[in-house]
Length: 137
Image (tube, rainbow, N blue to C red; front, side, top):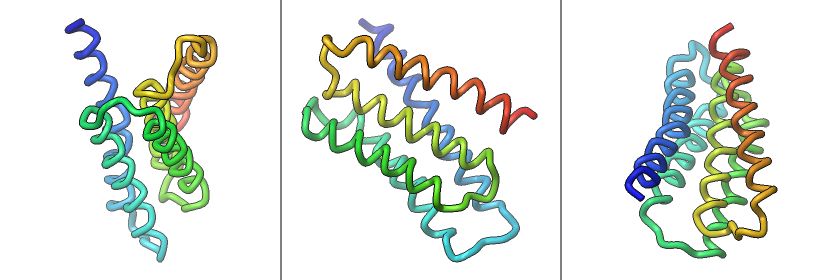
């Protein structure tokens, strides 16, 4: 039981690192256009939604709402025009992982194990691909 709790908190550090990394890249970008406050607000909203996961109780309507908000956050990131592809990847990946975590917080039912496993595989594969493509190469 302790291992599961520790693994959950470690899993929360991944999207936090992605959101913070994207914020650093955006702040350090040499050119800041009029959408800069919107991008920083997206990152801040992601961090607030992430910090709410361990603080709120299990609620199916709240979990589905936060899944939709997290996916909307990722969709908004696609049209915001981030300073680098790496920052865009970080926000998209963190938003997807945030939606996945909220899904498991209260919206998941054991009958949906196949869907949840596919989503976990998709997030893992896209994370490895994005790290190699945008952050290493």
